[in-house]
Length: 278
Image (cartoon, rainbow, N blue to C red; front, side, top):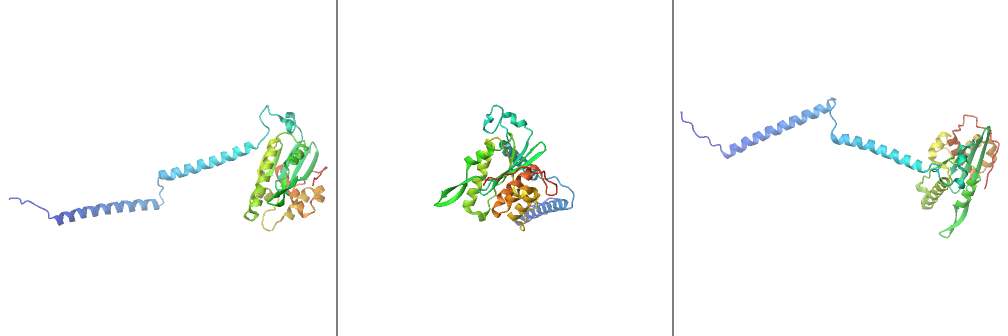
């Protein structure tokens, strides 16, 4: 039997190719659908490389942030390396002194600095208004911290080298305005510089940290509550905390108490000495 040549019509050829393409498309669709169903069926799938990279990047970022915080705190810690001149705030031997001192600082221009000291069985608490002076800013008289007087005041503490000073962190609020932001940042930076320069170890404390400890956070609390709590912790100092403008003294005392680990529900050490400088 003689075979006849088969010449496909161009339309038939195109139709054949179209059918093959359609079948391949359906095959791909089925494969994709089945793999999607597999993933949604609850069976664990191998994470993609992008997910793994994201997870790894998050861990590295967290480690980097922790390292930055450690570096920052280390830069505020004293004493300095051997060979440094300690004469500015005492002698190297003072590092081993038996007194247990803690300093608390409210760095605002209307703030204060408190010193809690325990020598053997004698405990004392002192609080001082932050030294300040009047300056002209844009033709207006404004209060600014007096750096030289702050140095002299800290010298008078005779605290051992490396004594920890707990300093409230400066947190600007929108309602404070530009002058408030500038003044808050200036005071915070000035106190850090002076304290570290004199050999103290500075620990920045968020305001919420010490306020939460003494149940002073929340909308229903005020600066009057700070004075009330400070008077409870340091009853012999209560005459110095009667006025509304004494809230800076109260907050400095509470920041120091936070650093020393004092609690409201625990009887505080008997305060045998107190003083204040206006």
